[in-house]
Image 1 (cartoon, helix red, strand yellow):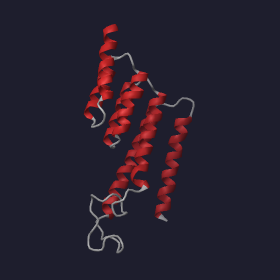
Image 2 (cartoon, helix red, strand yellow; image 1 turned 60 degrees about the horizontal axis):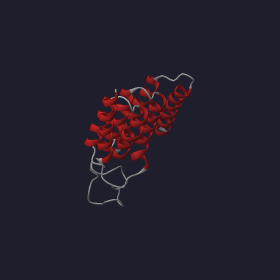
Image 3 (spheres, one colour; image 1 turned 135 degrees about the vertical axis):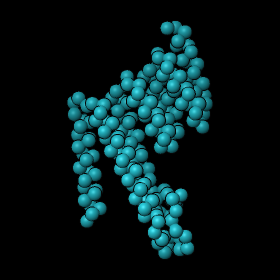
Image 4 (cartoon, one colour; image 1 turned 135 degrees about the horizontal axis):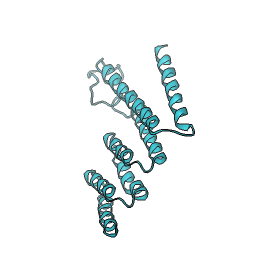
Length: 174
C-alpha cells in the first residue's frame, strides 16, 4: 500500500511538471525545477538500494555473500531498467530545455555537465560536436568550451580538434 501511494504521488508531481512544460509560455525555471525533482528521485532510489543491500541476499542470488554497494540494483549485479530510466529522463528533460532555449549558453553547459556526471560520455560528445556547433557557431568562447569538454572525455578526439580549428577560423573573421 505504501509503494502504491509513493508511485501515485510521483505520477502526480510529474503530471504537474509536464503540464507546466507544455503550456504556451514555458519558463526555464520550470525545466530546472523538473530536473531537480528527477535528480532527487534518483538519489532517493540509490539510497534505498544501498539501504536494502545491507540485508542478506535472497537464497537463490548468492547464498554466502551479502550484497555490497558495488552491486548494481538488487538483481545480482545485472543492470535493470530502473538503473538507467531516471537518468534517461533527466537527460531528456535537459534536451527539451536546450531545444526550447537555444541561445542560453549556461543551459548548454549544464546539459554537458549533467551528461558527463551521469557517465553518458558519447552523449556529451554529441552535444558538443553537433548541437553547440549548429546553434552557436559564431562565438569563440563556446567553441573553446566545447573543445575543452571534448578533450577531457576519453572518446574520439577528432571532434575536439574540429571544434578548436573552427573556433580559430571564426574568430579570424570577426
